[in-house]
Length: 279
Ligand code: AMP
Image (cartoon, rainbow, N blue to C red; front, side):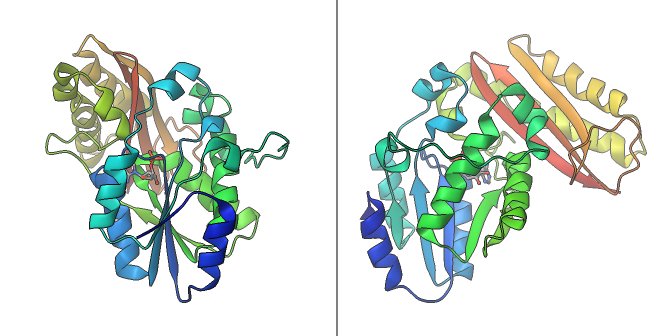
C-alpha cells in the first residue's frame, strides 16, 4: 500500500496507473461504513485510492473540528488489511496553501437541512472534493447514503462542472443496535451510545406509518420526534421530510421518492441519519 503526503508524488504514481480508479474521500477514524465503500470500489475498479483529510473548511464550529477523532495509525492498519492500493494523506498546508482564494459552491441544494444548520458546511465539502477529484483523477468515486444531502450535492456538482467521474452511492452500514456507523460515535459516552439507536427506531416508526398510507409530513415528524424525545438528553436539531432529488420540504407526500432525515445532538455530539422512501 502506497502512502502519499504530497500532491506531486501522488501524481507521479497516478501517471503509471491504468484502468478504472475508484476513490473514497474520508475524514479518517475509519469504521465499517468506510470499509464497505472500499470493498465496493475494490470489487468494481482496478485500483482503489482513499484519502484521509479532516477538512477544516467544512467545519463551522471550531470545537467540533478540534473534537473530531484522529486515528491515523489505526486507519492505516485497517487500510493495509483491506489491501487498498494508495492512501492520500495530505496536511492542511498542502490542501490550503496560504495564498489560496478559490472555492467551489453549490447554490441550491446546499441551503437546507445540514446546510442551514451548519452554515458554510457544503462549500467546504464541494471545495475539498473538487480539489481531491483534480488530484486523484478517479474514474469512480464512492459516497455513503448516510450523508444523503452531501451525496446529492456531489452528484449535482459533478454534473454542473462536467467532472468525468461516476458517482457510486453506497448503502448506510449500521451497528448491531441499528445506530448508523459514524466516526463521531467514537466520541459518544457508552451510556449515550447504547441509547443512540433511538434515532433509527424513530425513523423506522415513520417508515411503518408510510407503509400504512400516512401522507402528512407533520404527522411523520411528530412520530419521529416523540420517539427521540423519549430520551431527554437527545436534542433534535431538525427533522425533514423532503422530495428526494430537490430536497424541497413537503407537507403532503405525493412525490415518488422522499428523503426523511434527522440531525440530533447528544452530549454535544451531532449525529445524522435518514432513509429514502419510494411510493
Ligand atoms: P466521512 O469520513 O464521515 O467524511 O465519510 C466518508 C464517506 O463515508 C462518506 O461518503 C460518507 O457518506 C461515508 N459513510 C460514513 N458513514 C457511513 C455509514 N455508516 N455507511 C456507509 N457509508 C458511510
